[in-house]
Image 1 (cartoon, helix red, strand yellow):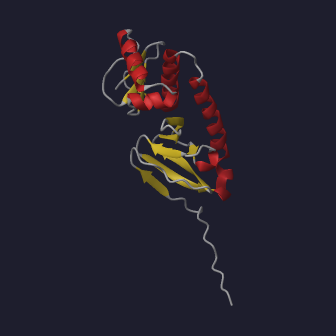
Image 2: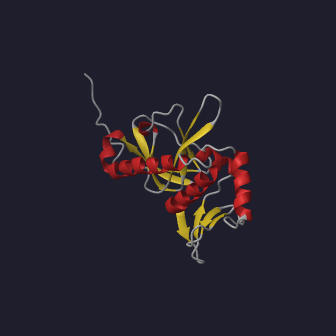
Image 3: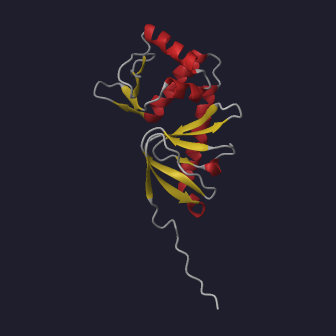
Length: 197
């Protein structure tokens, strides 16, 4: 005689999981991660070793292998992250987040299609401010992401050398200002951008 044990619903009490900066979130075919805090990037790697960023995701976004056909596919934390695993049978609870995922992917794709590198970089900063910015006491919009020039290059498909060159040009033009390493800053009065490295 076989005794069947009742299956425990893994989703009744989702477990909050913490990930340190620059760690990889585990991938599962039957679940997605719902982000509660922090920022991750989804990426793939081409045959020549080039990292291609597929998107940046933050609070209340979902990420996971079921949302991508990229192979390989990775989710890397750019900041400390708190996330909950949402299993397939409960995806109906994150329908709004799935719709936002598609919309934000399209916004990101638009940035990548500007023909001039300078415009692409400025559009990226605007998008980062919109998605991850907060207003400081001086009224400036800041982003608490420590992105290297290589990270920025990977985001928009430029070389690190090009990003560094453009950042220097923007600094000379007064478009950016070098301060501490942790923020991208944008003044309310366009077109003044500040990128702190």
